[in-house]
Image (tube, rainbow, N blue to C red; front, side):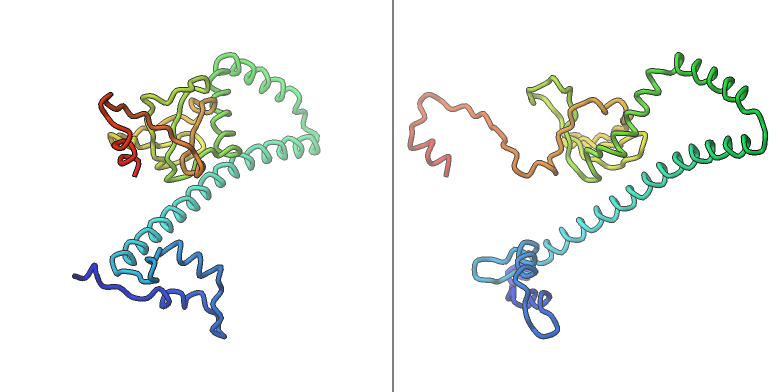
Length: 224
């Protein structure tokens, strides 16, 4: 069958060779981690195609992450430009002899009224922006768990895949049911976010129940 055909990994290892034919051992080790040949140094055609597919998916995620980061950076740039242009405009008006203090007093009164009316919402809004712009607890494609900081138990917790990120909201897809949810960043800014993609050495505890009649030999066989 086509899936049983194989070829030597040395063919792919030639990608790590320079113009003089020297094979860089570091690059060769990285290629081994990507394609994973067997103990005989061979690679089946099926494994080669699967490795290429995995690399393609990683490149797509990388491209999407770069594009998403560019969108977030552009939004931050627009916000900073607006603040800078406002301050620059006031300075220019002052230099031209205009009295801007009455205008500043009027704007301050308006901002103070808005602060009382939308204080909590504005605070949550800014917390969400700071979370994405500074902390950045997750990236596209990460598997995350959002929970209350005081909740220690993971029983009944649901993991989500991150599908889209903006400064204001995050789109998540539930792993078990494939549901899609759009969450305001401010609502999860103070939550505990567990990122599986950034926890490569995490220890998972699995509780298993056995009958009283199970022997030690049977449990040892189960461990094997």
